[in-house]
Image (cartoon, rainbow, N blue to C red):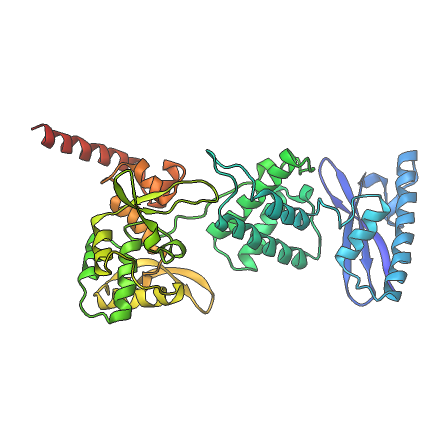
Length: 424
């Protein structure tokens, strides 16, 4: 048989929160805040209820007795209807009893997250004239929803937007770290995305936020290890004569990627139709017709050299998976066998681990965009490079290639010396 009792837990300023405690008689215990608080001196330890020593405490006492009877009645009905008794079930009984919001309303965290993904993100204004967010951002929020859903199951509790507080963020962070085994940069990204959504809900959709949601701390985690292919290494790969035909195609796509800063999904989709002449200049046209954003990438000599191999066209099509598999073999055959400090995924733990690894093992399609940004930094004005890498601020760009404040000094020194040579 079930048993419903009340407990008190210390809050602040010598006040205690009153919790309902449901024991289902088979070893499971569920607790839920009632919303009432009390001083310890007004608590009837023997009966587990507020003392009836003044009108306010008497009303609390009577209300809690009514709630206890309601839980018993709902419990009996749940058994008849074969409804599972859980923490969520207890939450709904208490919410309904006190006339609080139900678990199905649109302030539920997961329900609002669906609304945010489907109805807000596609139209959310960005800097400049752009409307809507990137596919990567949409995917991040879809994954955030999966993680929050798992978190609710782990806690056996449903959450509302108003529940997202600094304490909630810490508990969610702890869950992602300890249960999902995610690294700090990944968990930090989820916390930041969650905070952004809740702030938008409170500001634009008139939802009730937790009063301290702005105090949620966000972080990017420790710096990721920067692995790139230097210009010398790219030259070595370009001159390698040990490759078969399939590996040569992968090698040529790699050279294109490292000289256009395109992600693999965009790179491997390029066709001759992307090659255009705009205002007398030959470019790769990466303009987005949907957003109206123009992006033209100049044909560096290294790009022209690859295109010339294929009579002015791009190399034959290959899949992302095949491309990544071949890249490591290409780098190994090119002699990139020396050890370098980096990160590799451990298939047993499915987490990246830092260490010394042969350089060829660290090569993947993700290396291309950062290689471009790093290799061309200082050779061309940073704003021009940012147009190609799609970084919105110089700070983001410099963090991406791990450049610090002192690098500005070095770049100034380089420009000063260059100008002296030109003037002489």
